[in-house]
Image (tube, rainbow, N blue to C red; front, side):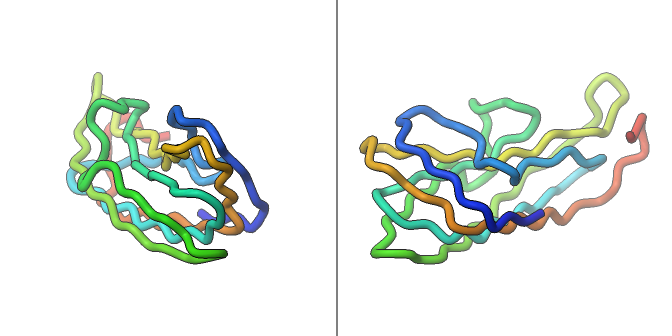
Length: 122
């Protein structure tokens, strides 16, 4: 999934990066690679599955301090399993400004690599 329209955050709380979330039918290991072009203050990213922020995808929270408009790439991994006989899972990339300084997203790409699940896939 990709987007070229910008978004901005200055919130110190976690928010979904606009336009980069998706629901997929997955089972076992999932790899999510995010490439983001940002500018502004320091920014932190994490990837969460099924809206469970207490268990973000590994390696967990990552931090980036852009110097001007810069591009960064991170890869996150997790295991998924059926929940109530359903293999559909929601994947969201989230961000926050730890200092409250504005951070602008200029473009972003998220690539999900996974084995397709078989139970109640939509």
